[in-house]
Amino acid sequence: MTTYRDTSHKLLTDYPRPSVAVDTAVLTVGDGVLCVALVQKEKSRRLPGTFVHERETLADAVLRSLHDKAHIMGLRPRQLQVFDAPNRDTRGWVISVAHLVAAPQASISQAELTPVSEVRDLDYDHDLILKLAVSTLRASYRASADPEHLLGPEFTLLELLRLHSAIAGEPLGKDTFRRHMLGQLVETDAYRPGLVGKPAKVFRHAAA
Amino acid sequence: MTTYRDTSHKLLTDYPRPSVAVDTAVLTVGDGVLCVALVQKEKSRRLPGTFVHERETLADAVLRSLHDKAHIMGLRPRQLQVFDAPNRDTRGWVISVAHLVAAPQASISQAELTPVSEVRDLDYDHDLILKLAVSTLRASYRASADPEHLLGPEFTLLELLRLHSAIAGEPLGKDTFRRHMLGQLVETDAYRPGLVGKPAKVFRHAAA
DNA sequence: ACGAAATAGCTCAAATCTGCGATAATTAGT
DNA sequence: ACTAATTATCGCAGATTTGAGCTATTTCGT
Image (cartoon, rainbow over all chains, first blue to last red; front, side, top):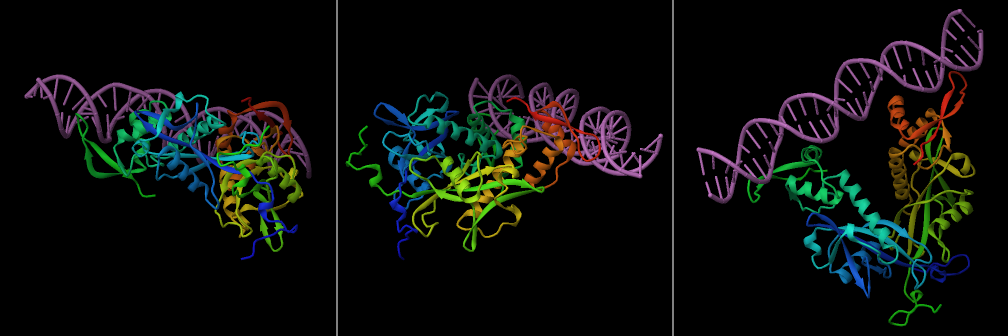
């Protein structure tokens, strides 16, 4: 395999190229509110991020940075947008591919979580990334019952309603929500008792 | 301004970095169908693309490549997704930021247009990029009257209906469409005559 | 047994949406 | 004037959605 050279006999690596970073908004629902995982760096706060390693995919870079910086493992990153302002980083020419990761709270319990409504003044363009991530997640949840599988394979309608309310950031009507969701779900044989009252039916996602 | 070095005293450019390309699906409506601009390279066809120049934004790279490769000027690129498979390009480690540009046919008349339903076997992952661009444009047009301003500032309802039908790739009901659109439009004082029959009212977008 | 709380879901009235037939107005051609 | 074509839109019936009141069932505690 001969290394490719162009018509000027130059390698691709002979040309100027930006450093490519990934920055990730890790969103979860905790205590009924939508939260984001942040990392501290000196006196400031930011989203977890890293530079892409040689021949590494962006998703692998995201997962590596979450593991290294926020003790988070095993998630499914979703690309949002490339932030490419040439002066966005004082260290040099850096572009960043913003990602969204949504995770159940239990799987990111070691991370520092902040309700998204309370986040202020993040580094770089991370405020923008967070805003984009939140609106993307909200759109996802408007379109589908639990696209990011935050609730696991089985769940009650109340759990699903609470999840959706937290993500939407507002209360949702119980019966209207139920009617919307039923078409996407199937009942299992199981019931899940609460503290008091009738046990709730357990559902799972209908086959695609 | 001292050049930044990290804790190992290395410059950012001392680390391996991918070449960053842009590839663009330029979509337009011509003769009632949704078309894409393609470029020929030897015996194959692809979307117009280029490598990002030093300290250049992605959007500027898109516009430069459209001007140089397809004689297209003055448009508004929209990011779709980064294609980052490490082996996607035989020449080396190249990631590509896929873009969508939607343009009136008149502004890209020098480009080679192909109806999107007839496109087959593009280079690299360009089939995927085109598919993503088409679905993105369709979603945009489902949500708004003319988000990409393909019709210019003023238009008749029939022009708008034809545009939407072409983008959707299917006929749309005339009166239902009208009722949906009216909330987003205001009438001008003008009328636009056809070949025969009553002149049509001319509309513009309602203020945001 | 009774009361309270939680789940499930039915019913209803009102609002909204959809597809389409019908009508009125406007233009060009004969 | 008449015919044909185009635009604009109203009204209608039927379908669908929405918000909420109400009832039945199930569980726990007294």
